[in-house]
Image (cartoon, rainbow, N blue to C red):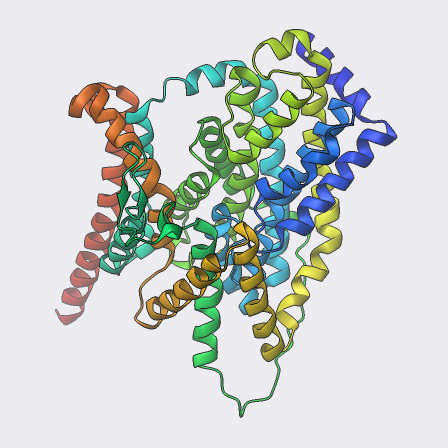
Length: 502
């Protein structure tokens, strides 16, 4: 009863003009900045941070949380429209979102993305409100061995991403893991494969790799196959499904929301792992798994819901334990500390109004995302109606500007172009680029936690700790199961062929 009373008081407090205005501005800024490739959610929130210094702490947090919610949703928009992931976690969205847009179903894909983001955001916030403290205690059971095993489980999704061509997917993921060996050793501080280049001391930044592989790789591929003699421009007309259509995807959204929230609670796990795991899970349980990667609505729903649910889960360790679980949450935590508020369990006792006001602002922000996103659907979807020469020019400009804006570095621009060429080569010879991203995202986390686990417990830590063992068993099962399915399908086809001959 006390929980409901505090939540009610927080909601009443946030229904005033000023807090609603702050949430609205935050969501609008987050959506606008999130659609620009290279502008991450944490960067967008950090840009608004100075404006909160002189504000009431509650209003300032409402502004930042609104930006967090809006940026998290809109990072997936360019993934659907121009095959460019705005954030690492939006990569699985383009697997099916972009094929849907190319076939004239862009409105459908963006509608699914919007509603799945809304459902995931509400679910993640509900878990945050109801189970923040016990879930944070559960997350503390995750040590280095568990994080390593979780990353191995994430890499197991390569078995489904590669499909029949699993050998090419394996080569791609190994290439991604290899990229993480360049730079400074995370534990010893020594230089590895930097070739004397100071710019490589920190390794490659993830966003130029993402933008290059997907946006420029697709652009170079399209330019290679573009016929200048064909001046006919095909203009798609977009229809938006009725609300009942989204209800049919409720179980996909719910499953992905659970995955996104649980992974978000783990400090340092990251939303990218959640998105890949949710997408992989949905592909395995779906009756239409063969359509994944070709324009399956279930794939867009899974990625969008898990990504948004991750925002609520990532706040659990900050509010319950005082531990920032993600880069964006670290910015939010610094905003509280600037106002003299120390995040942690004492906040629920000393600052209940602020805590439950933040909870209420997250619910309101999710609602604003739905309405602002719905109003902007017709704007986003018209991107693919632009004539190809103009569209290609703007995509190239955005990729260059986006990769430069990350660290104001021309080196990152060169990295983006280089990986654009790599993405084009991969696409030309039938190698998937998604496993490369998976290897880059998980490589550093895997290496660091593997070495920590070995130093602490030796190899025994991976089979004496129950959670780590369970994750590793699931990873092995996830890798083996597609091969069993393929063997059964081939055997069944062989029996059918033999029966026809008889």
